[in-house]
Image (tube, rainbow, N blue to C red):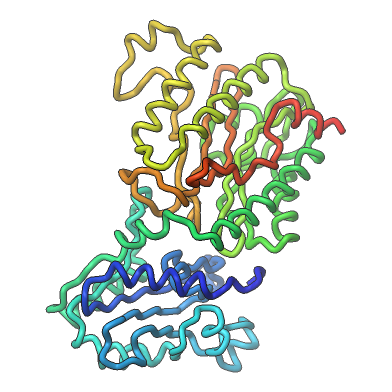
Length: 429
């Protein structure tokens, strides 16, 4: 791991909060993510199951967490099962947790090797009334591969068909949305690394540079500061490319007079930043580019003020849509007549602003949270309005990460250059 060990108190508290939500005499099991093959003899870089990490702090493949608060045998009320290292693994793969290191990271006392899992589970499972199993219930996700959680569900139902099975996901959806102080600090660190990479890019960008050269500057700064890497595939979209919402070819030349739309963020200790900026390749916006830029900026600031505890997701996005509509009329991109005759299911503003304004942020970039649950203190959300004008070869998106608190919003990216003039000043310094 590139990051210092996180205080185990975070994971101890997370497990306590999870246990409070279980039915009496329940057993819960969480599995690490699969290791996915990349080629004949290589895997993709391992990414831990966010729920397992949230409850244990263990960042290693082939890990299992078992929680059984009412277990008649006290040894098995909280158990971690780890892949046991050996001389071959030490030579070819290197570091793996020892039992003492796993105990220190997680705060879990009882650590066993993975080979003991089946026997220990079988010795206690018949005393439990309910079994909580995990699956990915993020509503942005649709599985096409029978991953570890799904295979494990099938195995458990086959071995122990008469137990009452429960879903862990609704509990995790509720818990993960509200961030603790430690999680907030980790997110701030990811944002700070992202800030430094962006400032580096502002000083690096000039006409003729390739999009992938800018991407290289970003990942250099991320890795230099101990980030795991990109929180998601970065978007470096110059000119017309900015109108492709998920553009990530990043292989074109940045031409004088164009605007580059950036969407990137650092991942640090499994917590993520998510930032969007738009900058002029030549160091100065044209009058029209600045007009569109400032319209997006005004919507962003107004939307940030709307993020308060108790706000309902759909209402919030409708209000932002109304704000965007006014600016698009002022920019002469749509007319009052277009709005009057619009299809309510697809408002006129959607022609130029077709995506949502906000999403939850945390261990997942699009973090697990309830779409129909009102925003609450402790939520971290993005605010990312945009205007995309293919006929002008211009796309502008701005995005910061906002923490909702009882005393008002805190912009975790407040120190990242945002005003058009500030960006121009840095690029020309």
